[in-house]
Length: 614
Image (cartoon, rainbow, N blue to C red; front, side, top):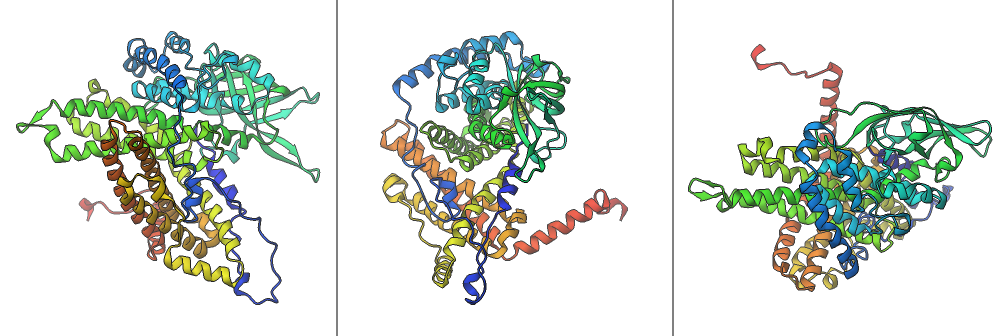
């Protein structure tokens, strides 16, 4: 399942950056229609694009699980780990490309297929932070199993939970929450990938108005071979105000039992082989009108809500996988002897281990910041969720790769188990939002927010002067890090504040330079997104470390040191990315890249001559 976010980034930019030219024009020039007023946001990342440090969603660290919630979670964790060790056979799942139904049934008995579903609908009634902990445990033992779990509840029936009517919830959620039936999310098609606007599956309302007739096909559908209930996205003809008809995407709850639903064979995948991935075809499937999910023509909105709401599941699973790789690394380097010394005594090995731990710490900090903010009712977290997914999927890959490297030849062997984890992890940089697309989503959505404020601020000569001053000085972030960050971390907080100011200054410069053309400046936007990831993750790390220090945890000193280590490195990385984005040489580099790529593609392959033939 690939992301719909490419369309979001581009659609949101069609109304982008009406930067006013009137301030420098004479008064007799007729003003254009005023753009929509800029709207303030409580999101840390949204405000980052304005060079502002709005910390209400970051400090203090928002994790606030009650003792009762911890106790309930604890009652599930032990039997869950026991089941994943003793009942589930991750090696066999990988070899046979299957997870037996009997294993899934035992998992269901723990209530872990209905973690977020209310008890009155036969679910566990957990919150998002409890859900993240469950996903983390599953990810540590079997990422393929985690995909089955996530495809079922994080996206498969999540639309019913979020957007469904009371009748839809009563009809479907009890069976889905208990694992009596399984769900799948059906969006991706051969022509879509990350572009949901090209969906070709169609649903036409019948003449009697009692059902929709669905035709089309989906590819790479997780749980597609055995799911009983599908959340399906299809084009529907929507009548416009002027009487014309326009195709818009709608979402539907489709049962296999409706008839006309068929699945292809299991796909042969690089990793997560235990999970079921197939094509799903719909041939004149009659969907009752009451199975429309949300409003007709608002399927894209439904899809976005599902993906944003469930996106913390991947970072949680990746956190578990990283912990597994780090533990295997520690076990190895503390026993393996080379050149008369244990591996743990070598500086290069120590550096690799600390890098692995720092990446884990940052990812885990974001996971529980995001889930906790969702638990307290915060609605605007789409950029934070996207950052969490990108950072987690890439960090987990690097952590596992380093674990293999430290193990040497042993790490390359199937027996060690790390090669399977590496294969499994590769998909997480692609599905539920390909990381390249998510980076553009982060950068362009944030730039749009900043652009609206910039246009509003630029009205009048005074506004232009203010902008000019802030461009030179970097402006004031308005941060309260001195009050909310522990005193032992103030040097890190100061570095973070400086990068926030530079970030806002850089984005402002790019907006003023390229205006609407910024949409196509992927070289700069990619680097802006990377800097945003560095900055937000550092804020999450400082918040968590402060929380731990304040609560006098036994690991407080260790976490203070790992936080300092991570932030120092991340701020240097952010500074480099921002300088590259703002560099006057960026245009030359982009032209060179474009020229070389066109030459190779135009040639149908590599153009350089082999040295043997010279």
